[in-house]
Length: 265
Ligand code: 2HA
Ligand code: ZN
Image (cartoon, rainbow, N blue to C red):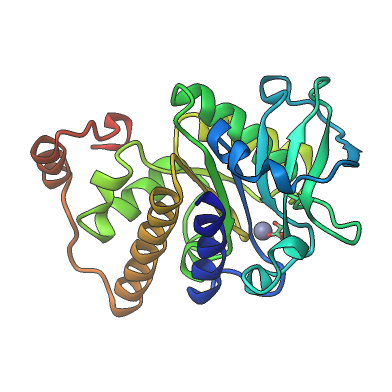
């Protein structure tokens, strides 16, 4: 059941230490079967909210989404208070809250980035992408203090820090330089990058990851965070060697993946 997977991801992210206080948020674009499985629990008098941006490609889409100001830590204890199900309305500029988010709660403050990312990834994957996840992992965020805000620099450092990385995200990662979170502008900028990269790092803040299911999306963020941790440990100890570009090419050949040539030397 999708709701179990959604809740498990919230608590797994908290267990990793990625969700201090109300940090981080998660959204899942539901299938028709998901909607059928839970529609008997929908309220007959939904609350309607309008958005300051439009998401025309998502008209009629249903999302399970974490609430604004809610703590990931509390999601398993009281799902209906901390997460909810919304449906984007026919104008594409608002939504109805059909389940959860009780007591006047609203979807995450990062709703613009979530919906813009969903639109971008839905197009990039022919509809396969369903999960958008934002977390505050410490090592990934620490990396943003030691690297220039360029996709090539991050992608190379991460690929070089754990052999699996170039296979897990052969396209590399995107990076957004510091911007005001929760804004429509950071949503647009993140979505522009996420159509090419499944993960986008936010400078001095955290990361957005995407995927077709919860495992894939959590696994992607987990892999990036682990590689960032290894890099920072190695950098602290003193790096004397690393994975070479020829070794990265050999990985691509062995695993049949196209490693982004623009980032190889
Ligand atoms: O939900 O993580 O970026 C709180 C945040 C904002
Ligand atoms: Zn955040």
